[in-house]
Image (cartoon, rainbow, N blue to C red; front, side):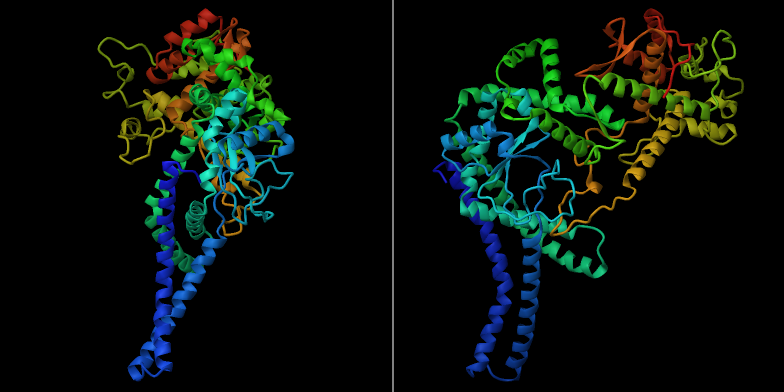
Length: 623
């Protein structure tokens, strides 16, 4: 370990962590030491008598129990498998240039070379210690380390940690930028090789893995009781060394950054801007582009290539990012891979599994999709599926076309049916915008319970309808009443039915995917990643009823535009699915749909339909 100030601080903190381990060992051996003293005193004739004999028996029994408990805790800590980040292993044969660059970087920094390289579908890079005996090389036919968690891995003991690189970096960054970004990460192998720091890390990781083992469900009452005691001791030790461990890692990072200053420091300043830009583009690509495809049972197989397209589009739109596209003429870091397309596909499948909980392998209901096929295979199918769901809910609510419109075709799903249902009548003078006073009855609510287009809003009496429409929101944290964000009673009823219908479909799909698949339990010899824990990093919270209603109405509008006005589905790299009308993207459609769903005002949307040549009375094709 070098003479950096951070390295010295890290070593002192590592010794503090090891002192916690030493004190725990001393506490476990203290009863045994007392028993030895009493036994030796009895054999030498110094501690004799009935009282001493009783003390010897009691202390010896206690010492044996404490030693057995300590041995059990040590066994659990030693055999518990520390958590490993799901990654795509990169063999040296598949990326010789990348390994050569990392090896040269380690030589320039005068630190040990990482034992292996792996990729992760995230915008980050780090060193990961996989020296635990349970951490072995993955099976060659597996794409990622999440697959087959019950399989016992081969045992190995690498001398240095594994270098984990974010896959978006390889596609967006140039070779020089990647080397500059990886310099402080690779420099961390120097402090990691110090015996005291390595021992302290093993101790902390073992305690953390033991806590995970003791928290696993599905055990009997006796095992739960025993493991509860083990977990209590492990948590107590973790609390005792938590501060020292955190400061040790800060010291290691400071030492690595100080050592890396001598290598590509000027390029690193520029490359850090690319790190933030890549993170923004990756997040936008996952939430706006990949997530709709995942929900349709398709996974884009070139996500990393999509990052380049998304950031190039951003540089075209944003004048602040104009200089970033000029870098694309330099050699990209993905050229360091022998087969970048295969690696991108594996990283895309792992990203779908981590962020959405998709299966580990492609199948009939989980197939890849290329970017060229995305508009037809994902966008068109998504809109028609949502439109079909919307009309199923309208059928359940017994919603019919307006009787005073005779020119519309009563057969087939039409956009006019949706517009008429969600539109409120014009507000007469002195009445409210919701139009409730236009209905007969002293309160304006007397006949709402009998209107079929409102569905099942409450009891048949007016009080039941009033309670269903204007009930206060429950004061429970994290609870949102379906349709509570929708501004009209008609929209509230429709949004509630859509939420229920979508929840039933998702529950059926989840049950079908889980049929015949047993989730393995966590244990000392099994992986900590299982299907029951996925997705590990959900991208977005569940959509609200307001968002669901707006999405479904938008889908119906897009279907009408495609079938009656010649519009086409498109892919916007920053905004996801988009509608192309007359060769231009319909960017202002969302606000017009919200005016209808929230305010019951169809005028903005109808004006846009007329200007675009879309005929809402024509039937559309559904899935």
